[in-house]
Length: 288
Image 1 (cartoon, helix red, strand yellow):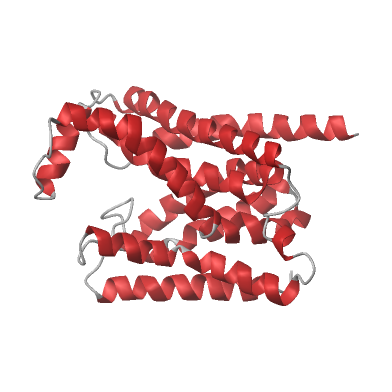
Image 2 (cartoon, one colour):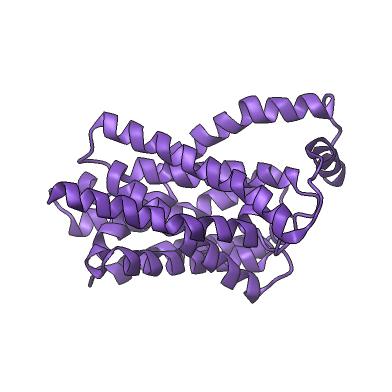
């Protein structure tokens, strides 16, 4: 526990320094799409940097295991990474009908939404929007999930779930999830205040983002327990890839009715928490 402040200082310090550079350069999107993605990706390396430094300093002889990269068979990692992909897709997918039901809004037209997004970005539609949607769902989404899983294994998840989670397991599963969920949410504060995920909400957006990360953390934590950091990265990577696509099916994807990021998503995640408790209780009974 005494080394956790070192991890947090590096993780938050590096990432918030990058966020400060984003703000100093005009905020999100001011540098163009590629530059913004590059800076956000660099920001995501903060938790990984903290984890690597702490593993080198404090986990001699067991560094890979301390990062969640060792101690799991290939079959186990593959099984739980695949399950993580499916659970994240299911959660984001269910958030859409739940949002429609709770908000009373009409289902969105994804083709029209894509056309509007391209027009807002002052980009020409390279092909028929319906064809573009099919390509995005059939090719872009799977590729995005795979890429995000790989990148998050060496960035955020290496820190939050890879190194930090085992350090906090002594608190108990649910208090550990609460602690990491809050830290994970607050880590996003600088970019949320710039409009990331919850534009215009300011500090309310930070609070909502923290609720979002806290509700997702038990799902990530269970994946980490069973399949290591790669499985947790699979959960996170799928969430990042699928959540934005799911908004195409909402006619008014604004807070609080912004699908997985809003009330509908929170209801779905809260409803699934008893299943996590059941899954963990079942494993304990089998172990006994």
